[in-house]
Image (tube, rainbow, N blue to C red; front, top):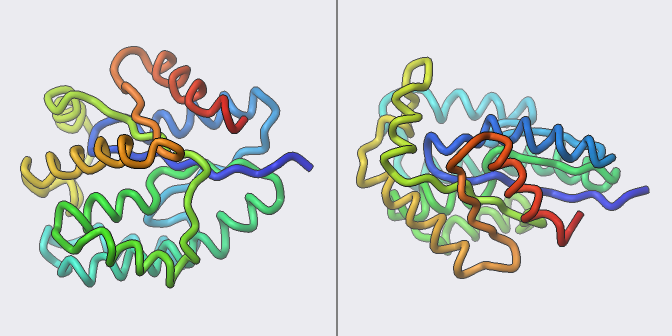
Length: 207
């Protein structure tokens, strides 16, 4: 049985994670891997129920601590029921957002603190980390333009102000520097296929 892997896609709003999740999964399947795609918050029945609580209502519906606890609860169910079993079965799990989003959105941008988010993750999910975290990065102006072009109403997180999203982007860039063994910063400019090729290149060492 081939070795399972766990890959997370991260980044701020409008960087193209959903598109690249699909394209990366297709490319990995073409290389012979059995791939499971999933998302956070969500990915399991219990986590999807919590997702509805997190994304509805105004931007300040939950305090930073309450929001982080809800994310941690959703992640714990997702890890136990989907991610760990799939990796153990030799599958590649590619997830749209994981722990680093909580660190960026709740820990840094909402001021809860990185240590508290990591403590919740240790309790709820046993401290599980992806084998590789790929952070998609765009210049702020381009990311905002993509956001404006998206269909549908903005959720609680997308409605938060520019300063909030600037802190999110800065956090992702910082962990790419501070945690280079796991995290790779990926240029998300250009054609979709070019971005997918960059993602694949960043996985070569663990493929």
